[in-house]
Image (cartoon, rainbow, N blue to C red; front, side):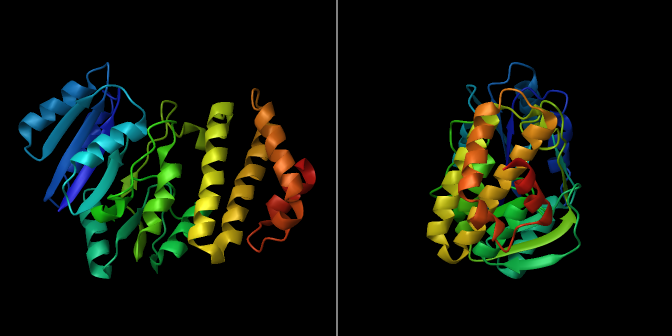
Length: 299
C-alpha cells in the first residue's frame, strides 16, 4: 500500500533511530526502500543488517550522487500506491504512516500533509492544488520538504528530482502538488526534523551558513518556479511574484545584517531586481509590514 523511501549518506550515528521509527509504525503494510548513496561509513552496513531481519526493507547501494539522484533511485524502485519520504537524520511518530494514509483515504485526497515538531497546528484544511501551493509558500504551516507528506504514486509518474544541485525539494514540490486534485492537511505533529550543521538545510535555521552557491541555486529555482506556476495558475501569478520578491528582500536583510562575506554579487543582483519591481512589490496585497520597512532600509 505504501512505499517509504529513505536516502542515507554517512549517517551511521543517526540512521538506526530513523529506521526504528519506521519499523515501529502502527500501520504495517509498507515496503521500506533505503538507498545508500555511496556512504563511506557504516551506514550501508547498518541498513543491510536491518534488511536481513525485516523482509519489508530493500536496500539499494549506489555510487555517490546528489540527493535528487538518490531519491530517484528509490522512486524508480517503489511499487506502493502511496509514497512517503523520510530522512535518515529525522524520526517519525509511531502513527505517522497511518495518520497520513487515513487523511488521504478519508478525504479522497491525492496528497496528505501532517505537522512537524517545529510547526504544530491542530487545524484541518482541504485544499485545491493552487491553494496548497500558496499555503506552502507562506512556510508557516508546512514547508517544501518531502517528509511530512504522502502522495499517490501516480502524481510523480512523470516527475523526477533534479540530479544536479543540492536543494531538490524547492525544484519539485510545487510540481507534485500542482498535479493533485485535492490536498488534505492536518497539522498535528507526526514527524521531527533534526537540524544540525551537517544537515543540507542547516542554513535555514542558522543564517550565518548562507553562501553564494546556495543563494544562486535558490534564486534560479524561484525564478523558474514563478514562471512555471504563473503559466499553470495565471490567476495567482501576482502571489507567485510576491513570494519571489519576498525571498529576495529576506536574503538582502540577512546578508546586510549579518555582514555575510562572499555574497556581494548576489546582494547586488537582488537589490537591483527589487529596485526595478519596487512599486509592484509594495503594492502586493500579500506584502508584510516588516517587508515594507526593509524595502525602505535596503533598496
